[in-house]
Image (cartoon, rainbow, N blue to C red; front, side, top):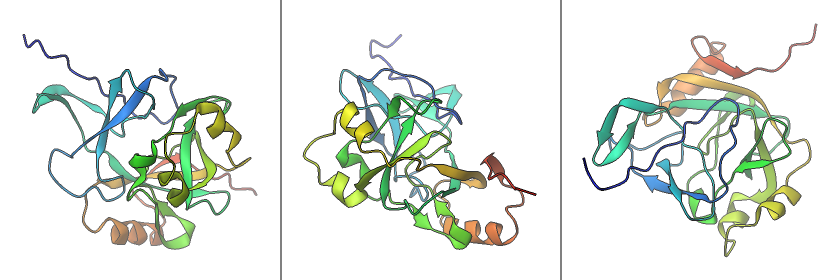
Length: 205
């Protein structure tokens, strides 16, 4: 048995789960070497004894380890809508009660993470949004320029009141698909047939 400890990955769930506040995201290149269209061009795993918490977008592969690390399945592309124009605002994850901060990025984590505008008001997720996502007043450009990661209290104080994800769909293809934008728009035009709804808008009669 190797003397090296294996850093466990955290599974990204549809509802946020509590976790320690003394952890940070470490970028790991996708195992297939492909460009991660729809995410931040990297997977993220947990590392202890530092400052920021982030969740991994994917599921742990029970098959074991590749290259000395636990292997993860490549996550599916997600698209979403919000109840306002928050495409340029940095998202963070809250708990189910939306009163506690669960995960947030370091300023250096945000390069190339802005969502891509799609048809019919949808956005292609490249940051890892979910039902418990909230949006900060900082734009991606402003947050990336910060000299250090803001404290939890400062982030909570800078949330946009009421800003939330209202629709969220998982697409039937994985991150790294070269024509992801075109495929998303085609499926949107077809009524999102074959896509998995993770959060749907309530249709009033």
